[in-house]
Image (cartoon, rainbow, N blue to C red; front, side):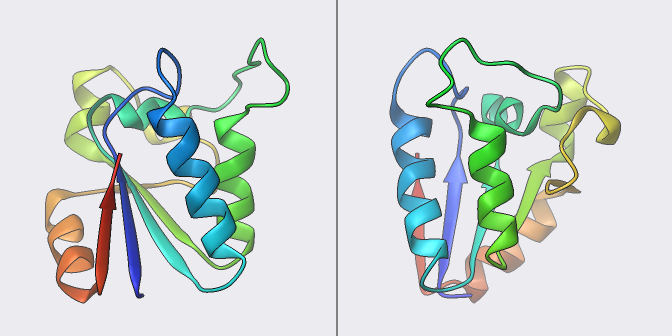
Length: 114
């Protein structure tokens, strides 16, 4: 994979994750990418959310990235710290680890963080 996106922030509260997901989704239409949800970023992959603004649904954006061939993982330690289980996430997001992030970072030509 050429590009790795790392999201550290909640999908709500500021526009960093929104703008990063927009970029990741657009890039995923041209080349496969990887996305790692870290810290509060793991909440972007939560299942069952009904955002107040229909024009911004991070789960739909992540599913579109996965449908384009992108790989998406959420930090398992970060999930545990927030009381989340694998069943808390949408199907497009797997439970990941710091070792996986290390491997993805070493394999990526570009690492983009939000």
